[in-house]
Image (cartoon, rainbow, N blue to C red; front, side, top):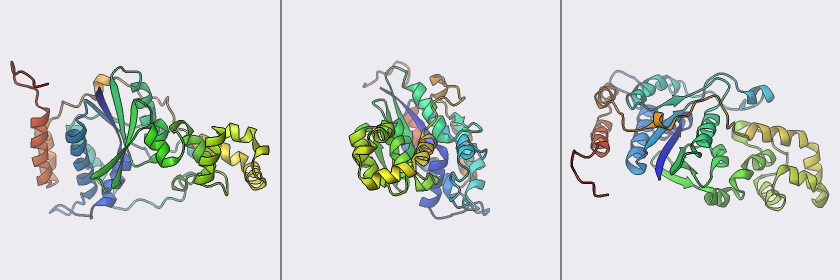
Length: 302
């Protein structure tokens, strides 16, 4: 099986920033998020050895979710002043790797990841791994698509297949949307049903399968559950709509565009030198050897 890696750029950028102290270059440029992101990228190349790779980014433009629910993500604090100024410099480094970077007005990175993974699942003999810290993508887990999430800093990760998602969340990947429609999602300010927490949401879905199924069997629930679900029915279905990832965002997918072995090593070295990432330059040299094609007439061991 060949591997396609899809990275949630904003999620990993934030993870890198908050996992490392705000160190600077000799010229005073803060570079901790850049360093952490690139270090994780090297780990992906060396540990997973992807055949294909791409990165999705959020844009500042509002999405349909903001239009449907003006309080969507409204509770989030502004990012640190020295975080997003690092993004242009990070993208300069990523461009030397010739990694496709995808973003669309009106869509979140998760929607792009969902669309690309949905299209990529049609390919034969291809495994898709989505690298993100956002559990919204658990709804994408399948026999062909897995979710890789950092669990400590950026060096330790956990891989979620459908069985692992159910073990973690108490519901199947295809039930994640309805799970969040019931329990809400404080990280995105999605309301859900007031008083129905994760445990009740999981129990209800295990018995009735879907949000519709729960409402079709309201008379079987406790009086308290009936009251909560009846009063917040509109909120539940709004939350369901907000939580569902888009699988047909207007991004083109051609697998050949995601091939990993086309790195401009000279330019990459130059960018890493400008950022004073000496240890990453050594990792780049090691990566070049790893990705080098076999010499002519050299018999492969595999």
